[in-house]
Image 1 (spheres, rainbow, N blue to C red):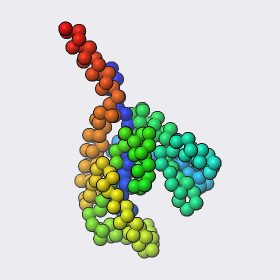
Image 2 (tube, one colour):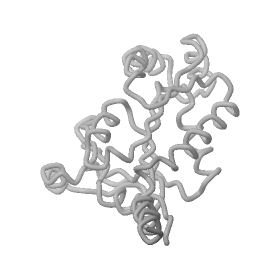
Image 3 (cartoon, rainbow, N blue to C red):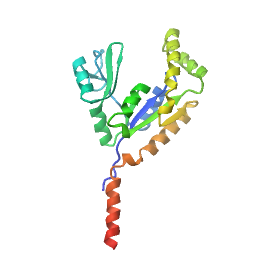
Image 4 (cartoon, rainbow, N blue to C red):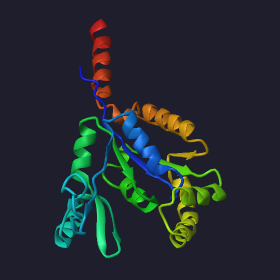
Length: 214
């Protein structure tokens, strides 16, 4: 009897600077079988980008057809280009027992949870220990101008307001500790009944044994 599990759709969301990207990379290092969801986009490829690895590059018509046919788990328009998560590769991965990691915002999370694969979703929201610490981290990483940081800080309040839509909420006050809690959640959720398709056959086999004893 095979006891192969189904994979999880792991959604990690947070305001910018709360540690989501760092935690995502640590999860991949911890378990290389976890893969990032490869998005589709209508923007042209940049030098060095590979179709199917960095993005699935689609024309506007191709992208619209995927949305209309229900083949996109979530999608959004960003600066005139469309981005989204194709259902096919994700469905194949979870049927093969591989977890898929989504680095998306609360709007994308809502769409994925409402999709045909929603029952396999594990959603986790990462909070900063304080707003002052969130701003400090954005300045410390030195990736953005003061103007961009101000925009990210303004947006963070709206993002944080959706914390209650998630299965789990972690306050990232200490990175190693948060990573360990994240791993514990994933290990437990992998054992969820919905992720164990072999259980029903096992229950039938147990019941058959009962009947044979009568």
